[in-house]
Image (cartoon, rainbow, N blue to C red; front, top):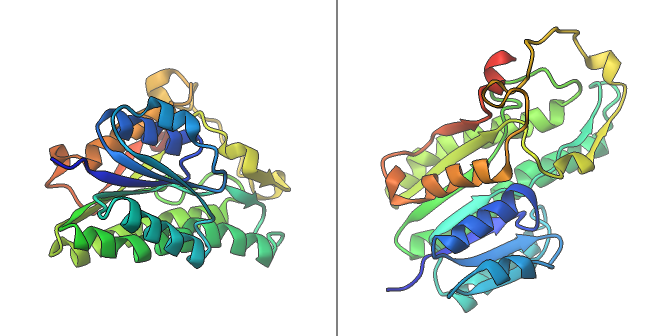
Length: 255
């Protein structure tokens, strides 16, 4: 029996890397897409399967088309897509947020999601169906209290809308699409965040002690999200589509 094939974007670190590792353990062959091609550590964890690493930018059409071409050539099929690549970008008051900063966040998070789906759904159709998971956030969906996060929140809300729209469109092709919405997770995404003039956009609020109730305030782990992604890609969720799953330890309910 052929091994299922999955694409993970943003696979070089954080949630993407944890997801790649989980899929490897679950018996998937993998196409791992990231700006940085150094993904050998994932390959070493993969037992008995095939891994290809593809360097590229999700916001660049030619890069995603190249990924689709490599998947067709190397595997001949695609069964699962994890659209994970994204950035926090610049968080600043709306009258201070520059158009180029807005565009960069939208291009990576939203255009990147569109291009990933646009190029990979034909491969899923060719395989007779499959499953997609988009990695969004509680921001823009359940939480709106991060000062200046307008561009980021807009892209995350749009990702949920995309999944809900496509759940109906893709159902006749036996393709399911769902969303995970993480809260605070231990990753390096904050390294790509620039926060400016926070005080101008912030509304002072006194939160209950501990912002993540189920862990006493500690952030979740990337593996908490990858576990949810693996479930949504598996037959255990075969009757779930168009659904956002919150992986935030209850954090969003406080905000």
